[in-house]
Image 1 (cartoon, rainbow, N blue to C red):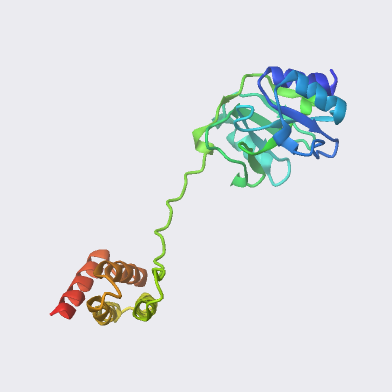
Image 2 (cartoon, rainbow, N blue to C red; image 1 turned 90 degrees about the horizontal axis):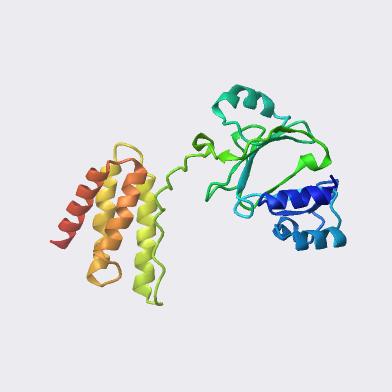
Length: 254
């Protein structure tokens, strides 16, 4: 079979293809974004650009995600140690001696490099691979692509709480800008307080900021939120922080 015939066969499977040169560089100006399953468009690209290698756009375009196992960086050693955990899915040998394991694309799965292990890459949404059987490399397993293994999907780390930032001035009021600067400095001082004086410093700084409530430059909620962030950043317990802030603001109001 010619590379064009391989490209058409891939398209018949539902894999979006595009022409690639022997250097693995796409021949179309838009690269894998030109990938299509339309036979007429594929023949048109063959006439205009020529197929030396066949590229497949991974992700939603082809409903495939590929586990790219590199011969270098101990990729094959990882595969040998984990192959019993992997389903029997379509597998190709690559030109460099590695492996391409085909799976059904999992919505939201993105490309990654060595996040699973050194030498183990993921080709998913926004990525592409070369269809190496088009130049005679073997299909080691001709089974249909299986579901993407859950254990290969990194567990997302919880997002850190957003850092408190001074509220942007809505107008040019001098008191407002002065109060914001005082709040920012108080947060910085409390967050950097050493153990032993953290609670006392939080109390004193909060008490000092309460004077800006009377002229409307700061609201009680703004002060409480900012100082709570500072107290927790300093290492105080959240309940202790809330109690100290309430006491300081209550004392200032008397």
